[in-house]
Length: 228
Image: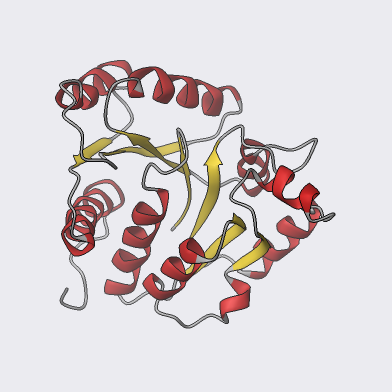
């Protein structure tokens, strides 16, 4: 089982969802690969994935293109007089083989990887089902709908939508997001919202519980083979 985790925006919780998916696979005795094709502004996301997957990979294999500035990959690469090679990304992905794993994108679907390729182009090329992460709050119905429609236009399957409250805000729309999205997309599981918590361990526990239930109910994963 493999997924491409993308978002409706940046900073919505993609890495947290990706890590939870990986931990759930590991808990069931699998050895999933973790891959962040492009990362900008440091290595925090890829190292989180590396650890969640069981830390069995070489660290340098978890991220293929890394750039210093926290910008869209195409822009960050340009500033360093470098470029993202999409063909190389396709070849790297093939080396992971058919086993389980999680690929985490950069930002949203139309974040540019190169002057000619956006994240959605890479998703289409890899032919992976998408887990779409959205920010719980005002505006997410619009942003999520636009993202879902973009994926559907490319005939990319959507495994689930996950809503995450990434900031401590008093937003009355949060409780309405999931019901409205379930009404719009009745065939797509809408998970969450995961509430904001100041302690990372508490948020992690919320994500893990949500993802475990989702994998078990939608994909027949059953119970973990090891205790949490």
